[in-house]
Each structure stands twice: as structure tokens, then as C-alpha cells.
Length: 380
Image (cartoon, rainbow, N blue to C red):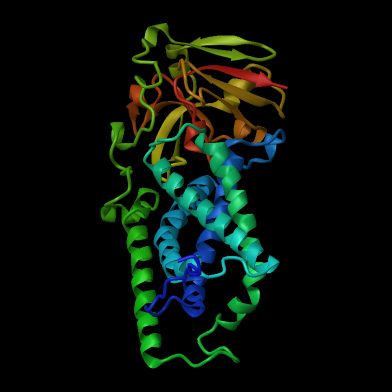
């Protein structure tokens, strides 16, 4: 036994379609899905966490955030079956021997490892976020954002390393490539049709949460745009926010500015009322338009002698939560569609929708449409 040598042979994969042509074909769809998801994710992060120059955040078009966040979630969900199919086509390469053949090969495998791990992490955590389920100890938003950049960097590196092979297999009849057996071509078309159908099916059965004409096809989305108090979904209830039912006769709105003042609920109701139709668009992907009635924030600011370029800090009466305070940049603060809303679809606000008063503004993430508003602070 002393003269025997142990030889490890890599497994042999007999199945067809684990090849570069199939992987490239799926990549044609997966690449754009990732690109849309990443770009719209940047928009979402920018809108939720604007930099110091917050006035650069626009208030129009009113449906801007609804569109970009709907695309973000839809493209992420569509990418799930595409990524799984892509991994199926290339997984035999995990068993290549020797595992590292050169410095270039080591760089390629490192980029693939980071790309695969990061992509699975992003899609899995993003999907769980749509259901507001967070079975992890870290904060979702900053980690999801950071890993997104990591995935894009790994993807760029991977494409750079694999560019010659991708170029060779990009078209059906690329010059210089070997002719494929007839059966392989037929099987490849069947596989691609199945993958495309899977991506289309998961999109069709979830996108109705933001693209409401397709809401009747909703099967897997965690929110239906018509279900909730006053036919509008709610992410955070009054009980969860520690607010409960606020007595209208005890409510006071404090407007802190050059000329501060305080209003009761009856005072707010006595002011000129304006009705607007604006969507609530949440980061989880659902959105719904509604009719809101209330007092224009710009009118409240002018009464406080706020400067024309002033920003506004909006403070909620809720006791806990990461978004109990939000900030309006100049564009939103001065937009005539931005309201301190008192009514929803012709009815007094439900407590879960922010009774007695809530913020509603165009082109703004739902988490920043502050509910149970108790204070407006004019910022220089």
C-alpha cells in the first residue's frame, strides 16, 4: 500500500447545454435585468437617503418613484429564475481540475465566487424585504446597498475576463465557432423558452402590486393594492408605531419657524382645503394612487414666514421607528401638491393611515410620507 497513490478525478457531466453558448444566451436577459435592478436601486437609495444637497431631489413627475421602485422590484424578481438557470448551465465548472490553472484563471474564479454569492444574497434579501421579513441581525438597507456595488464590481470584472468567450457566443451563428448538433440547438431553444416563461410568470403574478391594471393576476405578491384600511395597504399600523388612537380634541400641530404658531385639528380643518391625487409608493414594491385632501404645506410655511429656499423637518407623534422624522427639500416643500392630509378618498384618515394628519407629497418614497405629524420645523 505504501507504493499506491491516491488520484482524485473530477466528476464527468453527461448532460448537454452546460456550455458557454447556453450561458451567454441566458446572460442576454440576466444582464439587462441586473442593470435595471441596480440603477433603480440607486434611485431608491438616493430618494430614501438624500445627501446634504437634498434640494436636488425632484418632486416631479409625481409617479417617478412609483415607476422606478416598481421596476426595481419587478426586475429583481424576474432575475431569480434567470440567475438559477444561468447557474445550472455553468455549475459543472465548479468541479474543474486543477481548480486554479493560472493567475488569470484565479482572478476569474474569484470574480465568479463574489458575483454568485453577492447575487444570491441580493435577490434573496430583496425578496424577503418585499414581505417585510428580516431573519438576520444586520440592517437591511445599508448592507443591501453596499453588496449591490460589490456585485456590480464583480460583474464588470467577470465580463472583462470573459469578453472573448462572450463575443464568440453572442449570436446564433458567430464566425469561428463550431457548428452545434441539431438536437442541442432544439434543446437549447426549449430551455430558453422555459426560462423565459418562468421569468414572465413570476413577473406577471407579482407586478400588479405596482402596475395596478394587472392586479387581478396577483398570486405571490405580499401586498394587494386594494386591500387595507380605506382600500389602501398599510405597512406600519398605529399600534405598531406606538401611537394608537389620537384624540382629535387633544391634537396640536406645532409649526416652528421665524414666526412659530400652533394649530388644533379644528384650525386645520378651517383652513383652505385642497384635493390631489397622488400615489403611495413603498420600497417593498407596492403602490396605489388615492385622493388626498388637506392643507398645502407651502401655505403653512408662508404663514410661518419661512424663507423661499427653506427645507422642512417633519416630525411624527410615533414613539419609535427609523422614519419618525423625515425632511422635505425645497422642491417638495414648495410644491403645491404637497399636503398635510386630513382625508383619504373623501373620508377622515384611518388611524393606520396617520390620523389626524399625515404628509403626502409627489415623487416620494412611502416611508418618507410621514404619518401622525405633530411638528413642522423650518430649516435654514
